[in-house]
Length: 305
Image (tube, rainbow, N blue to C red):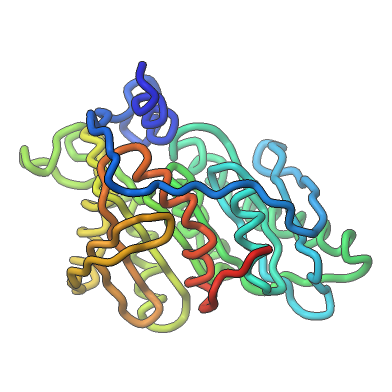
C-alpha cells in the first residue's frame, strides 16, 4: 500500500455507508506544484492536562499562559488530529481561550456515535470547565464554545449540533475538508444519477442559516478530492450553498501553507473557501492551516505562541 493510499484510508475510512475496510477510491495523483508547508512543534507556554472524554477516552487540554478566570474562558474543542497543532493555534490567538482535543479513531461514524447521547457533550464541557478552574486556582466559567474539526472529526460536530442542547452553546464552527456524506443509493456517484444522503448535512445547514443571520460563525474549507465511494467535500459544499441560495465567486490566490484558493462565498458570518488539490498532501494542508483559519474565525491575525 502506497503512502498516499495509507493516508487516505486512515483519514476517510468508516463514513456512514462505507465499510471500514473499503475507504475511498484513492487518488493516483502525486502533487508537486504546491508547497505543502508543514507546521513544526513549538513550545507554547501553558499547562497541559487531560480530562475524560466519550467512553473515558482522554481529551488533551491545554491552558495557555495568561489565561485568566476573571472573565469567561473560550473553549476551542478540536476533533481529529495531533493535539499539538490545535494547542499551538489557540496559544497563538492571544485570546482568553483554552484548547481541548478529542481523538477517537478513523472514520466519521466513530465520532458521530460518541456524541449521539446529548448529555455527552454537556458533560465534556463541565469537565473542561472544572479542570480549567483547578489550573487557574479558582472558579472559572466557559464563555464561547468553538468546535473545530478536520476530516473525519466532522462526525462529532454534526452529532453535537443535532440536539438543541448542543447547538445552543456553540458560537462558532470550523470544518476543515471534512463535510462528507454517503451517496444514495450507496456508492452511486452523482454523475451516475446518484444523490446525496442529506441526513448528515441538515445540521450544518441549520448552523449556516444561524451564521448568515449573525447568530453564529461558520467557516468551511474544502479541497477538490473525489473519494468516489462517498460524497466529496466539494459536492456537499455545493449542496449546502444551493440550499442557502448562495453562489461561489471564483478567485485565484495564495492561502496558508502554500495552498491555492479557487473559490469563496461569504454571507453574514458564514463563509466557504474552496482550495485546489486532489491528493493526500492537499487534504493534510487544511489541518496545518489551522492557525490561520482559527484566527480568521476569531477575527484576528495569528501570532507566534
